Length: 410
Image (cartoon, rainbow, N blue to C red):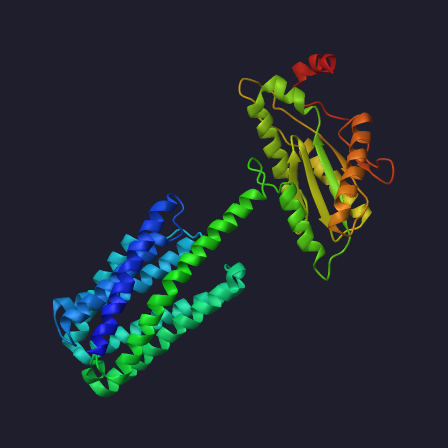
């Protein structure tokens, strides 16, 4: 009687959380994070246990075949949901339908050729194998695709490993003791149902917590990024720089301040859509030119910033010159014009600084160098400490036919 109560409670937990996951997925709209897959997994497993209650014990029937198929289809749905949660595209219905047909056919063949004991041992063995793969994947994620969730993934690996071990033991017991080992009131089955009921209580709220964490992380990411270029904004730069200086191996940093030359005239002449395209192209060049570990951001209007770590002054000046040349070599096609648009940037480089409070001083010194570069003709790199080592003449942001009008307007 206790076993039936446990299985009934397990069914109630699974089906209730299936409804909750489905409702959450509806509220998430385009970014469901696998919640609809988790809902289906819970539904399949809950229905499998409902069928087990109706059957009352091992049997050979259509209901039994369906029960075994739903039992094994549920971890597949969970696995596909995990892929969706971490952003990997994964279809749902086709893999499940293909698996259901294949496994139902396999059950019939095993029943006819090896008997019912082999069919029930197959269910336990396949369950153990599937959950072993899931546990190993979770452990792999600790060091790779889920580093930011390493404690959570280790916890899930531990729980899933428990299911794997119990199913492996059940497989051995079935092979040794036959179908009597599957009686619902047996000691092992009671342990199995208690463990599964515990998981049904603990795991779904944990999944909901992960979804909430992902949503809050996304909000924090949005709050720290410029929406147009996806570079860091002032807040994001300050937070990232604070984390960097808190590292033991942190070294002094340098700041590069970039300003797009004649940006107002670009907007006035070609329109804000082209102006936005220029900003996005400069952001793309900046992101692709700086070194790994450097911080890049947009701090307003046409001004960009790069914070360079692990280098000296000469190396930062060389990097700034590479950025300047890369921007100068970019072209932007303009509809209705035969000549593409080219733009340039002027870059001011600060001296080194070693803490977050020194950031404002570094920005002021880089800004002063930037305006010296603007006054000296633009399209150049200017250092806060010395006069500019790179004095490339400025290139106009206008096509050749508009050059004279641009000069007159200036």
